[in-house]
Image (cartoon, rainbow, N blue to C red; front, side, top):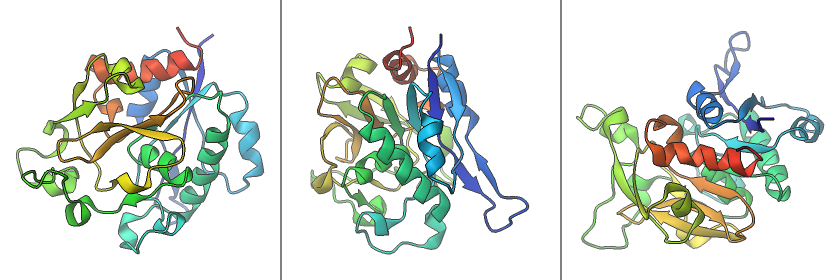
Length: 254
């Protein structure tokens, strides 16, 4: 039996009720299926009593990316409304992640915003805008162009851009990738705050400018992994395909 892997959704057109929709990008669905899992898309209910029952048959979960979580949840400062996800998704995702993180037997992978979600649900905080708030630890280094919006109109726009990520030797992510360095894409303007890493989490990967690129459970028996890049968009590269294979294997797959 292939393991059932849940995926949450992003919301679109919420200002037009007749066109509003919950979506999961096919790249996530195909990455899970390509790794041997059966993708099960879970929409954002308003009745949270449905959530426990919906999660019961699932063997693992991938928390997907999207707009920014509401900073009021983690004590952040105000942001432009255009950056933020709809409150319905925010409330649902917080409840979803809370249940998943308490179910220690359930393997969980968080991608980009899902990685940040893991951190804030476990009491951590975020750097809310890398371009204006991040100071590289090395004074001679400059902040990378992590957000695609900063690269628009340049040869580095979109899928072309890659930067190196350093992985902690012996960490779960290094074992999955099979190396202590990997080339990744980048589509984020926020990051895990180094001074506010969530309870029970270890930081295990960094960009050259010091931005946190992966977090994982300090408990080696628990598959709980958050990564800041988008491996679902690099499934032709074996290190990134291996991330979804590891999730499916932890959920009971081959």
